[in-house]
Length: 463
Image (cartoon, rainbow, N blue to C red; front, top):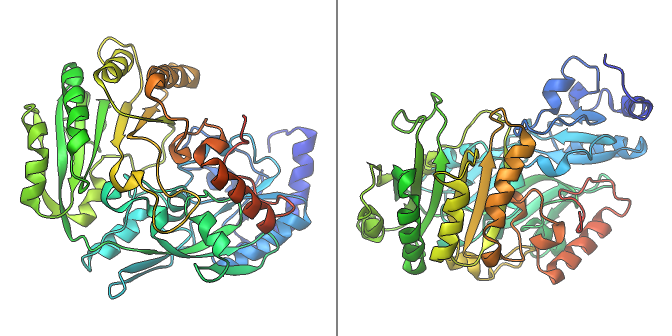
């Protein structure tokens, strides 16, 4: 076992009281499976928690919580660990509670609802719902956990017509800091349901969610791609197109320096491209008419077709295996020609950027309007979400971060004061909600967890 600082040795002793819990699936530093157990999906984060526990059900969750509190340790729930970076450096005195073993999933075709346990991935929901002609408001990668992404808001391919995934939540079951079980609905413990709709967590360990599904069997969807030398022309035209695009269409544009890896389509590998992905709900012919102005830009690659809703989860070609990645984002109001110029100058040809891609997600539509279902997050304050994503290609993470910062800072004249924290790992927590919602969320967290047992999912408001 590696030599540890004195404080870390003390923490290990405190964590010894957790052995035997969660069916024995508790790993402490020095244990054979500890290093494997602590790793999140985002391998950029190298965290060393006091212990890692894999509970199989809510009762084991409660036992771990009580034992952690009795030992003076904190608790940090985590599903897949896609959003692990905000927890970096904050888990040395915490039990990392991994929920991957909690995989219960039920789809009710009659009521068009799903019930998922804390370890369920979006790919599981998409496949099950697709068999009965339904769709969930899933993220761009099927490997993302349902619980974490839903608590954080959830921007899906159906978002411009149907809003945030968190607004689809109808019930939440969780274990509080004192080990008690709660089922929160609009009629019972409604504050906790309000917090679950976009509040990101920090008020308990969510063990199950129930949410509405959409009656979507197929959609008109695909990808258009050009050499990145066309980025200025394509993005300028796309920005104008988004101003009048129907709410039934959600699109994403990217400047993509595609790695030469076998899991990507061979015609993309190793190329530098500007790409537009889109999903159009409803009549396929109407979808084709909607994207016709983009096709008129003469893409090299055009994959648009009617496809099963279950296939849309794989549209954006996100990596499925754990990956070391840096990501950060801003919300922007509009995409005028000057903003496109700033983006291309810092991320496109000749920029020197080493980022894997810079992505612009089209917002607006239902995302711009407060949801009829009240929640901590009920809309997004911006027309586009601009996301910079980078891998360490030998330059080091500081260089990756500098590239992303330079690109996002170039858009500052158009940047919103709000942030979408699920994709803005360095933003202050207060920017994720309106001032009123933030204060209410903090009150709910203090009421549910008066001793501060749970590690908050974001850093403090002024970090």
